[in-house]
Image (cartoon, rainbow, N blue to C red; front, side, top):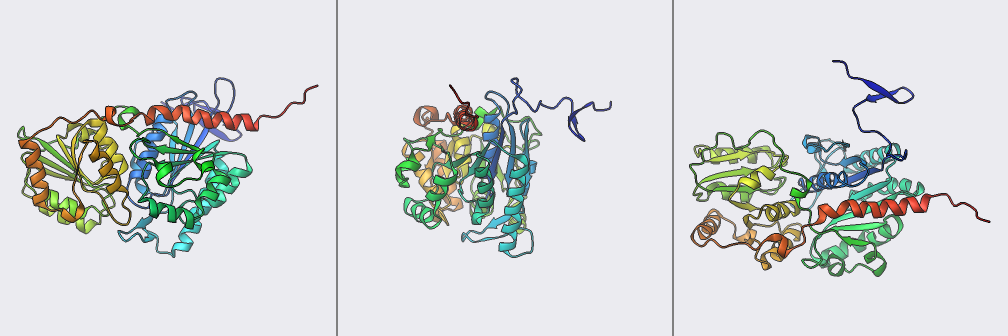
Length: 427
């Protein structure tokens, strides 16, 4: 059957079944842009997609456009009313150095291409609010022309921060060198901190100036289950020999620096089935070596890229993982026994987060210098021999971030509407 269309402007048609472009009051539906530079791992884009789902649940449905530096972003399922523009990719090595991930061109030229693309998209999309993930100026200042343009239009900008960025001294030095506080003063209306102040006081630890601190709102941790139930896609474990034993899950984020943990997991003693998710950024030769290690073990499966790991977390009995923000939130949401082997270079963010949660009895931590097959086997054996009941995560930390985001967005939109309303003269 032919698709029915209705006019949406001169020379433009859209499906009649699509969401209306205006609210019930005849106003334009709010437009939200979310930016993440995505130079390492999947955490930034996955967090922005979860935030998009949260914002679509409150009030008038906004129109949301993601700007991502990760080409794999288009593989993720987007909520209704959400779409994505991907930028030419930048990679980040384990030494902290950046490089063009695919295009054979100087970094300066690549940044210029990305910056011009970002500005052009923002100019055309004309968001009411832009939410910037982590980097106030963008990677290598690529956001600055776009921020200038949004300021000229009196649009609102929010800086979204995971609760832990790095060791306090390192963050204070980075923010000072980048003149981030001056940038926030000039361009940003709010700072959303995706964490629990009682777990880690981002404002205090990083020494935010009083006027910067006034912009901050702690949302609580972002519980992925509040964004909706796990997706019902193909079963990634179909055909895996389980033999009624426990299922151990190992995830290493994007995978670029996860090879040592992946190798140790595939060589440790597993009493039941094992699943390793390598991530799409792991070098191809490393992934092939891991598949060779897993060959001949019918109870072990190696998966390359899973856009929604929640079904795996739901079915796992134990989790062995690095300490990225999203992974920790998933472990908490599904109340899993977990061993975290955090990244410690070039940032100590994951180590600080893992230790904060370990102090609350919510997980166990193994320093990567102590990583090896025997260390993983010993942890698994200790769990089997002396099982202990985990405290309920929601009683130990604030997991209400997703539910609070619509109200926080409305706070920003209300301020935007109030400041842009015409002033009527009175007698």
